[in-house]
Image (cartoon, rainbow, N blue to C red; front, side, top):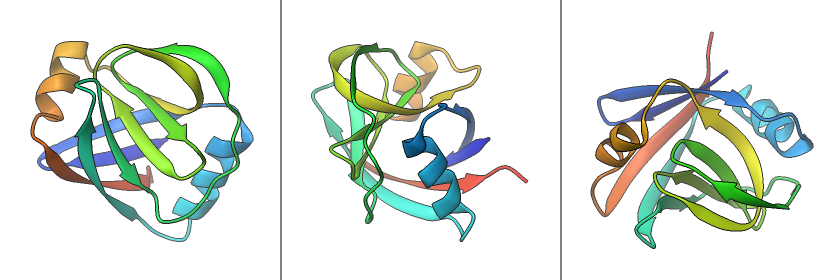
Length: 117
């Protein structure tokens, strides 16, 4: 399970079943990764992973709580809807769309990714 620390909020997410998510899990076994994220398009937070993951792009409609890989190197957390060719990495558990938007409010923030123990 993926753990995402956003300020005082700790979110958990279930990994997708693809080589991109498996590669992220393998990277996180080496230790946590912190990503500086910025708002984009009034629907998502996006930040550079600092490394590249394999892509498994497919046309999809995103929802709040979807965690996406974009172009193999951008980590994206959605708090609203989008439709595009993307790679799903994970899905946040038990958080409503309104809560996701509230947690991700602000132009810039840092998130720390780790694996659940």
